[in-house]
Every structure is written in structure tokens, then in C-alpha cells.
Amino acid sequence: MDAPTKNANVKPWPKQGLSDHVRAAPEPSAPRPSREAALEAVRTLLAFAGDDPAREGLLDTPKRVVEAYEEMFAGYRECPLDVLDKTFGEIGSYNDFVLVKDITFNSHCEHHIMPFFGKAHIAYKPVERVVGLSKLARLVDVYAKRLQTQEHMTSQIATALEEVLKPKGVAVMLEAEHMCMSIRGVTKPGSLTVTTQFSGLFLDNPQEQVRFMTMIRGGL
Image (cartoon, rainbow, N blue to C red; front, top):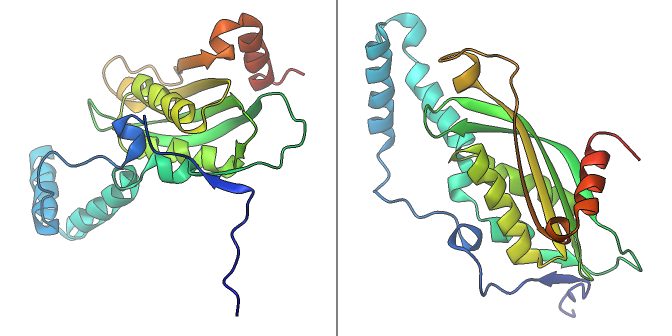
């Protein structure tokens, strides 16, 4: 039987000239603690909060918290390059930017380990090849599922797209509510933080920024 042939329209991108955070999942700066050490740390925090980790309602809480951490911070074990590595060349004469808007995400503030959540809007103008639309959403999740600042996350998403896809331009906008501002400190629920980063034609041509913003807000 003949070996299966590869789809010539699917192409991996070269790995040269990529930032560290794009090329690979981050290397831990210290050995990862054991699961039991993580469970004990949760028990300590429960006691610090003023409760009894041994009472019935909290007996399984450390296990649940550790499992939640493994899910919420899965981005530390994922590589952005792997998400964007394959592209497709069958785009005909298409010559405009591709926009995926309202990509929901959940992340955690690195200052308080409290959630911030909202929507990401991503556009890029391809050069001959495009990436699968779902990959843009996956890229957002790779960076969101780490301890983050919104500013850094915006920059990381834009940089990954710029370096891997090498498009004519990239536009990234994040809108999010931060629980560290909504339920503590100044306690201003409903406040949104908006961050943007542009490159290429979006940076050089203000009209393209206007089109990007208009399409996000529902204009034609």
C-alpha cells in the first residue's frame, strides 16, 4: 500500500527568528513542586483565611483547587508555534484582512492571582497563506491560561502572529474586566480595560485601524 501523501496546501512555517515565548512553552525557573506539596499549600491558605481545612466541607477543597490550577494554567505546557504551525494556500485572489472578533477568554492577573475575562479581537492581512480560524482562538487561550497582565498578553498574541505568519499587518484588541479591580481595592465592577497592538499596514495606515475598529463594533 502506498504511503499517504501529504496535502501540498498545508505548510509548516520555519522556526528561525522567533521570540522565546513563541518558539516553545516556557521553561519553569524552579522544579515543579509535588502534588502533595501543592495540596498542603492550599490547606495552609485555607487556615490563613481563618477556616479549618479539616472540616467536612473543605476536606476535598485542596484536591479541587489543584485540579483547577492544572486546567486554568494549562498554557504553561503549550507552545504558540504549534498552534500556528500549519497554514493553507487555497485563498484564491483574497486580498483583505481576516478578522475574528469576540473571542472569549479567561485569564488570571499575575499580581493577585484573580481572574480577568473578556473578549479578544484579532485581524491580520495574509501573504498568500492563511491559518485556520480556530487557531486564532487557540492562540488566545495559550497565553490566557498563564499568569498575565492584559498588556503583556496583547503584545504576546500580536508578536506570535507577526513572527510566525509574517503577514502584511496584525491588529489585536483585548477588552476585559479584572476581578482585582471589581471585587477588591477600588471595587469598581463593570469597568473594562482595553488594550491594542498594531503592526505593519495597521500601524502605518490609520484608515485600516478605523476599519478594524468599525468592524469590531458592528459597522459595515
